[in-house]
Length: 416
Image (cartoon, rainbow, N blue to C red):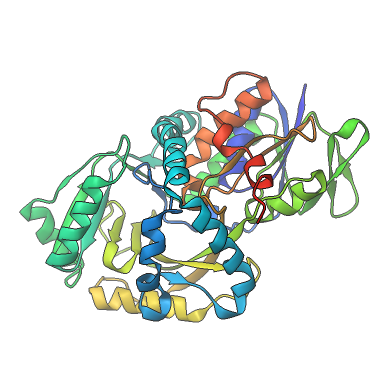
């Protein structure tokens, strides 16, 4: 039986592990986050098939000053981290050139079109029948002016296979009761999705892998080149793992793993924050709600309600900023949401590349080395389709989408 080692136990790594195990690979996952504190398990749970425009865009650059955290917005550029975010920002500005933006949008389209079907295929094999809900999400605005602008923006946005409709009067009244200060108007996306419980997702993926004979080894690993140019994994205790295939799916840690093979990937930790409260006062059947004026999304999970926000460009290991959690609590209070302390607090790092496209492919520098990382805000959304791509690469068959735009070599051509 062919052997695969996956470095990274987040949702992309586990979805890829299951896809390989289903193809009768013997799979070992090296997981540096057994406590599940990474962004895979702390995100908004939203399967965001409507996000067809890369965030590396001229529009995003123009709006950045008014979106700064210091001005009440969700974009944080910590002064002490200028050495991290300024070079990233310069690369992002180049990626936002119209031609590159359009190419990125075209690259994302088939990935997002395949995302929901891939989620259904994955969920069908998991012992968790209610895991995926395809019941849409809500976008709400606090004023007539922001609602008019928001509606125009969504009407012009490349939302792919997603669909939305206007709120009717009864829906608007129900949302106004839940968020008395947060609903001048709203729209309802009808076919986007949600993961019902992120912990249950992790458990279900782990159980499926185990049922196929796979295993998860807690700890960190590095890679080194061995005879023939192949990659070999080295665990913290010095043990080595040789495999027919090694997949790097380690999020913000991926570039360091790939560096010994000459690959470069200018990734940054795009850190998000959330607070969680008891779910008793929140309707169970309500889909995620985006309060767009505050760049905040509120999600009802199986056992809690979560409010999440912020794009903080930083080092993954920098201390969390308590002001972000305080701002979230202030948003909840200002909207009149029925969430009460004590809140649990979390911060995690989205792995983001300057063009806001993932890196997915096979290394040209090590015959057994694959990579799948850098999914930014779309890691949860694209995990199953990424797993299917990895399985196709492993089998030597055609992947379900063109992979040229996601080749890591695109950064090796960048002279910055």
